[in-house]
Image (cartoon, rainbow, N blue to C red):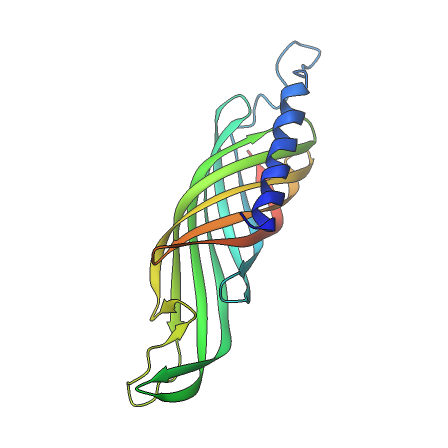
Length: 204
């Protein structure tokens, strides 16, 4: 597994250890801290590094989560990485052509999140879903597919996203930062891609 995946799993292990060693915090009335917290909604700036294509993508997204039990939440999120252009040299029938191809990516993921208590939350998450690649651009007389690396004419692929992060909260408003390894199963290959997000969220 590449360095990005190793760093992600180290962060996951750290969050688990912190959570396991943290005592439950109670209010003077004996009720559990954040008892009224049922979920969170937020927006974020998204960064994805497509490792095999050597392409950095930036976009925006949103997420919605609901508490299931104790520190466990279920979250759904969607992010759109804006179009990025890359020059490709493609050979067809012995002839090489240089074309400029556009790439855009849509992420749709769902899964559990486990977090610590207090105004500063450490958390880990493990989500799964799909990643849709959109590829467009000029082609020569219809003879050249629009492609970037192994992604041809756009497609949808299964993805798994383990990650970890931290939240800073003041009452119901907070800032969340996370990073992880977005593992995409692409045309029979498994690719490891760095993904990170930062943005505000509201707890309800």
